[in-house]
Image (cartoon, rainbow, N blue to C red; front, side):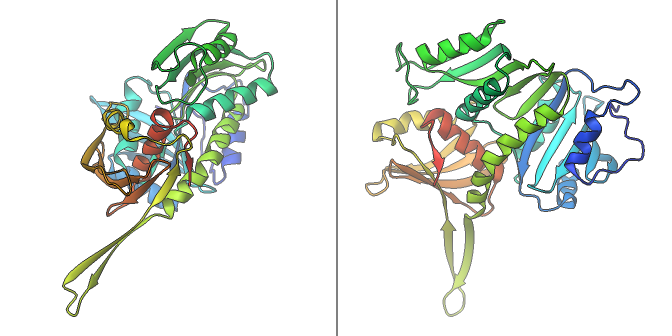
Length: 357
């Protein structure tokens, strides 16, 4: 059931918890293939986080301060997670030995998709490449043994060969670092999944949804990577938090409804064109993104506007673009999960340099 020997310890600080994970006591070590799922949320307290977990069917098995042991049942089996709520930046961090391909999607990822106050820690291809390059600077002898990389037709990354072609590449080999450099140069792809072995004995796999598999070594190095990604997403979460949806009753007898939507915006340096719109709408409905486009219109002033629904949780929001920016308007209740996923969609399918306005 459990894989941490916690006893009666209480953790109210993430650094104390990391120190505990790093501490080698009586030969105890973290299990191999430990799955670490980093998320970002709008929960203001751990109690809000707990209430949300319970609402979506998790059982709180035990509480160790801000560390929780939780479970959820599938197919008459209980799947267990340790969940730490880091209230410095409202980041829930999940640790589990559950299977990444079966158990985690049906329990934890299903919860993250459906809940409105929590999101995957989406790692854009550019951030993934920056992460790789920073680690190479710090550990020149690191080895990449596997990568998955992608290029979309709208990518503004230079490619020597056939830049107009959409392509996906998977590579396994001890020379993955050199091969990825070559693929980036010749085919203009950016990484979505990396398996990295550091010379200090730490090995891990990281994907674009913020799921890290610790293959070997200690937790501290991996947590530093998580923190660096979180720092880049804080600005996005803050921008989303400034959007608003308000309804006022107006008229002598308050018989009329007046709706005010305050958007958040994304700048598109390469600019969308009118003939990009059909492909944009088709890509939104792909399985990875799973949006439905409603009430789309071509407008002279704004070029294009539409209402989108996230098929995972029925969240609805409006978008409007003039080509060089896209404004995202909340409808009724803001949803950080759908918003961050939509931003990731823009980065991967529209403009890899898209930035919060």
